[in-house]
Image 1 (cartoon, one colour):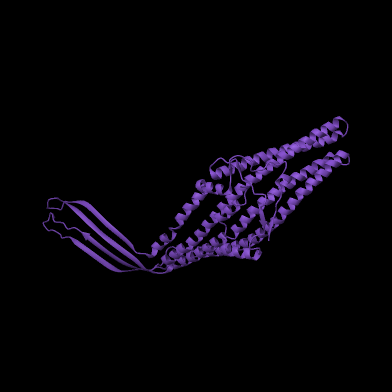
Image 2 (tube, helix red, strand yellow):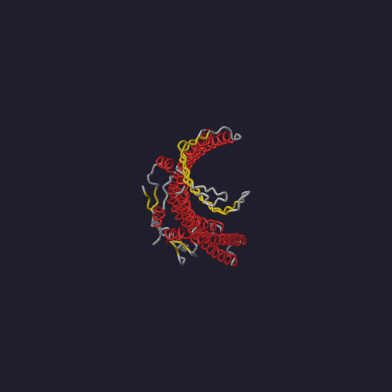
Length: 441
């Protein structure tokens, strides 16, 4: 069941300035488009896909015919004893054809190519999902930094006013010197916090500028009525099932296991004989200017037959390669089990985190209202002399902490929802477009 949280920004975030009130703001979709156009990682993913397409063609070559052509031209000078020297031009050409009839190693190498393609496709899918998540994370980290900066500025401004009021009250003897010192300390801390927030914004802007290769001042924030709800389907076991079926890392590990299996079979086949069908044709021109007076005619030669090769001993390399491949196969099986456990665990944890974020957003929304009410009451108590300036400062900190926590919980909900889809192996560009619809218009 989706929970609609309609919180008044005017009520909750005053005196915050919206993080989207900056010039030249981008949407998430625009950020994604620019990243695809300029980010080298995305370009590398596309080139990797093109390279992967050739894998099966390369490994299939070992079981297909091989045809070669040869040609040679040579100038020959003869100086036989008792005869005058002579010059002639030798021309030869030919062609040879070989077709494997029985070659277990070549066959399993072909199977390695098929398994490798499956593995590479899964790795490519994982890289694409990582890229999409990086775009979304970079986008929302800038939002997070902007909101934190505005919160820090608002807190600094409020504490500055409180410091001035406390100084005035001290001058007329209404409060002790310690109240001024407490207010000054709180103000100094707020200045330090604001400086840190400004640096965080610069870092986040630099990150998104690098990603998009463009100057980005700001990004659009999430709309007020963000549709916060549990993941759909709202069944943790269903998400675990999807992860075990589609997770890119697990699929790649399964592909690597198949590659290792076929590699072991190929190395084991290094002991097996090979049988090839071989044929050749050759032509050589004759010598019509023989100094001895005997001309030789042109000649041709055609051969066709079977070539059988039986490996006997190769210094122990074949056996060593077979043992190595077997160990690598067991290693790949262990990696599959690790990837399976990771997919199961991450899907379960992320589902729990997303459902927790739903509750946290609602709780932090309420905490803002509670903190603001507490601040009003504390300020009134301070004016009446029943509360100290420390109480007022703590109440102010609680208000700004609640506002920051509320904003962060919303961003965490979006990012972890995307991470859950990534672990389940179903994250795509359409998911970022869907999140884009949640932004302010």
